[in-house]
Picture 1 (cartoon, helix red, strand yellow):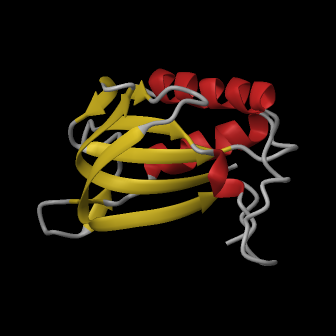
Picture 2 (cartoon, one colour):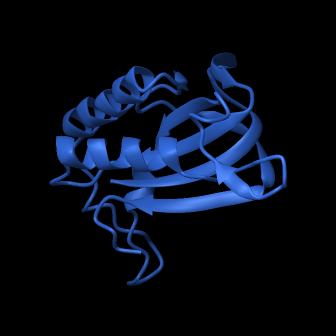
Amino acid sequence: MRAVVQRVNHSSVIVDGKVVGEIGKGLNVLLGVEEGDSEKDVVYMVEKIVNLRIFEDDQEKMNLSLLDVKGEMLCISQFTLMGDCRKGRRPSFSSAARPDDANALYEQFVKEVGLAGIRVETGQFQAHMVVDIQNDGPVTLLVDSKRGF
């Protein structure tokens, strides 16, 4: 499982001209599910992301987590994070989980984030989405449950 985690002042996602998810201060998380991912990957990713100390404290040091600042999360499924660009010019998505499996783990991730006390909004699985991200910092991090990078 892979995520692009962005600290944001505001983020929203639009499907067919309608806002389907919107947050204020918090994290925009683009989440990709890989073939072979399991509940263990979900648990790791939720724990890691909600506890990342990437928000500034009163001394302007990144010492606070999403939980600490009572921030929100916009989580958007993005299978293209599994794209392999090492060969040729067209990415290969062969390592991406099948849609049914990916959606189940994506929904579990969202549920677990909510259970951690975070208000979480989502995009729409397998839809064409327009994502508006006001990145704060900018702060953008990559998180991988296999710890490949």
